[in-house]
Image 1 (cartoon, helix red, strand yellow):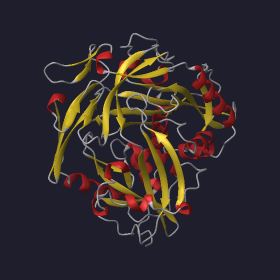
Image 2 (spheres, helix red, strand yellow; image 1 turned 90 degrees about the vertical axis):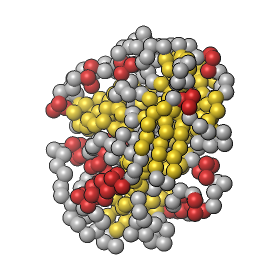
Image 3 (cartoon, rainbow, N blue to C red; image 1 turned 135 degrees about the vertical axis):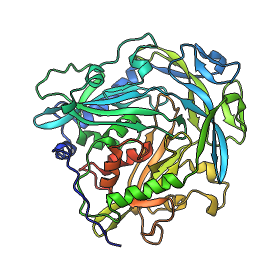
Length: 460
């Protein structure tokens, strides 16, 4: 099938071209990519952080409320673990969920060196990260963090993002986080540029990288953290395509229709009232041990705004699989997006990858009851896999939450051009355009979008 509609140009005043130039530059003005990897390894070795699993009784300043059973901090800050009930015409479920209504800042500082945009990235420790330290945005902080509810040190470089010069903002959008684990959580995703030649102090755990260097690191397992990936995906990086199977207006109409037809009713409830879950001394988990559990950890020697703390954290029961099926129609790359319902989404539905699940949760089911296209992705021949990397999710709230992220070339037999209900073929440019707005593209799709829209990536 050939693209049917010419797309209207989306003017970005040169930002896309500057980002493309940075993506094509793999030699940074300050450090090589190999030196960045050595720098990250140094911080992993020297951070001196120890993560221990502890019983809930070992949490400092956290307790279960006697009336609701909700797990909360004595300050009233940070987040709570509550219950969620989701009702749909085809069924309902209950689960624990993180409630964190405050809006955090995920901000990357940009500056030109030798005419090429560089980005100030941080070697940041998060307790849930595999290997602890990953490449993160310049600022990655909740409001509780940057208002110092923890009583610790100030967040470095925060002043660039609280009141930025509007003419120097390259991207600024509120984005959702994991709708399966967060209730209506949003963060402000920002890239703010400072003038070339402006003196910016670079602390030991920060370094300037080109976008091309970050792209190289995106090909490695567990190096670039989720927060950096979502900020980059929100930036206007995709060039205008010549056409698409659907016009931008047609895509919006389809997606709005998907949202309108979903009768999803999600409401917070007391944690102690959710059915099908058990609370023990060390975990809150489903009776069948599927999906995820809530556990508690102690963090010691963190080298962060505070040196140590305890907290509850969500741990999935197994590694995830996140994949876009990819096809080229009349020379234009497309990916198969899924209008996915998650209980924690503010608008119930966001665009997700073709497949997004933990496969072990479905091994007991017959093929017809497994997630659509899961077996297509699992059975893909190696030569059809265009990108495959393991990335972890947000390490501040999720423990060892790893997924294998894939871009898989498919065909008419496995993923027809006439997509089934709930699915739609979109171009990377269309997905990038939607990611510049709130609550359209989910966080897992944004990770793959960060790969798809970089000029040096050859996914197709």
